[in-house]
Length: 430
Image 1: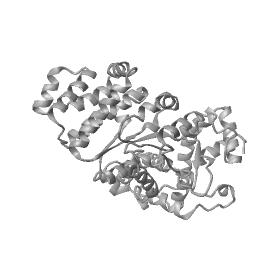
Image 2 (image 1 turned 90 degrees about the vertical axis):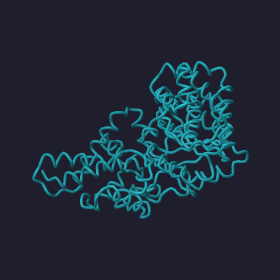
Image 3 (image 1 turned 60 degrees about the vertical axis):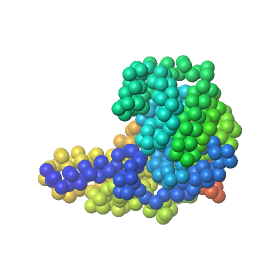
Image 4 (image 1 turned 135 degrees about the vertical axis):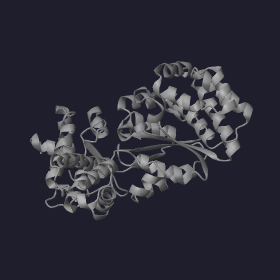
């Protein structure tokens, strides 16, 4: 087997993991200059918050680059703010997320970050907080003493319990369901202690709330948005883009956050409708950004230039889909290299891309029914559904079968994911 060819594709495959760029080393290797205007918008809302406790909603399609951008934004803020940036999926089992354990996770992560940076909270306050946390999460008194005497990592234990112990989560929910104000008061006490010790205002950024199922998001925000907005410091919450197309939820969110909503857009490869024209040429600047992302992850020896451009077009301008398609191409190539051990040359070409697209198309097809195809047909012809608040449409938007596009001088419009367009053709709908 050609070890060089295999190892080169293996490296590309590793580089194409569907994960955000959170660590500085990954940013240094793969980051492409993109989204600076969104960072500027977030910065303006954080900096100019009239009362210092503004709540910001950050939304966009799954895989549009929100997590990477928030990580970058948090790094830019650390000199001025006490920044707590965490993923809800690292803290709580995603199927069990609710407004109470979101707030409890804020409290835990505030303390974890304070411990990490050795913020000098007054000792009596610190011990009282330890005891409170330990009581709520059923941790024995001896472990509290261990924490204060030999540096036992109490908050690592608490985080583990929140993630793995459904009983603890349920007890926390029952404890605070009717007295949410007590939990918020404790969070504000922690934040005030950190502010006094660090001389920095608090900024909490909660990632991955946008990856929750829509039904769970509705439960969290529909009845509990007021509770999530009660902490006395700045918080950035992420939500799925489909939530902001819900006729009940959007007005609630706008009212409670003073309409402080920032959307991470899909990269627009074509002006509205131009991709329908024969021999349509994508916008140069958008294509260059996405091609740069590919070339930072895949050696030019492994990818034909024309095929790279086709991968860009088939992604619809969504970063996640760009990486997903290229990842699938690498998987196919790795199997080919192993099947033909003496092979010394192989590139991702049009034939391999077609196989990858077919595999992904089958993944989309598994979740589409008759009503879905009808909505997709509407979107394809009208660049909008007949009812943008229809549950099935919101599910298609959340599942990426439909992509939302916007620009500063245009109204929002929608299009069918390029790979799903092929399914519409197979069904004879276009």
